[in-house]
Image (cartoon, rainbow, N blue to C red):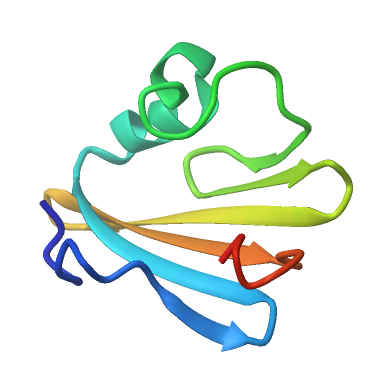
Length: 97
């Protein structure tokens, strides 16, 4: 469960086509990083397969889908937890939000 937002809270629009989500997850940071970067683990919460990525190991990851929208994932240690901040930019329409 997430300590920053209730299960019904998806995120906040910080710009018209940009969604920001923050979640406090069980650590360590290497565990959360593995769920972002390893296809078999990532498939449990988002999608499997190869994805074009920009990486700063264990701290920042950016992914581009279909050349139209991007997701950035930032990790920050918080004691035995990890703050995951996801920013999804250039969402094509309100339904995608």
